[in-house]
Amino acid sequence: MLDPGKSGKAEGLTVLFGREMQYAGVSVRKDPGAVLIWIGTALIMVGLIMTFAYIHRRMWGRVDETEEGTRNRVAFADKTSSLSTAPFAKMARALYNDPNNDVRKAD
Image (cartoon, rainbow, N blue to C red; front, side):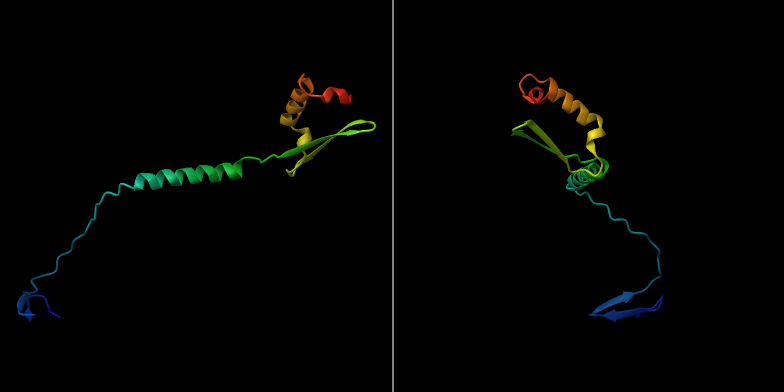
């Protein structure tokens, strides 16, 4: 180890330790794949927000012919009853008013 202002030999070379200098190093580089990484990250975040922000509603319906007439059964997968929501009421009105289905025969 050399002290400031001293010289020494290493592997046939003379090394002079003149003085200490303070400096800051900055490494600048361009990464062309960074744009794809940011786009992928944004898509993942949008998907994550959509997964937790929107209510998932699933409804099953079954219509059976019985001796007394037609029996309609509906089941829901969400925690709150979808029977009281506006989308279900809108769908029920659309089914009832559709001339291509047999919903009105049950009445």
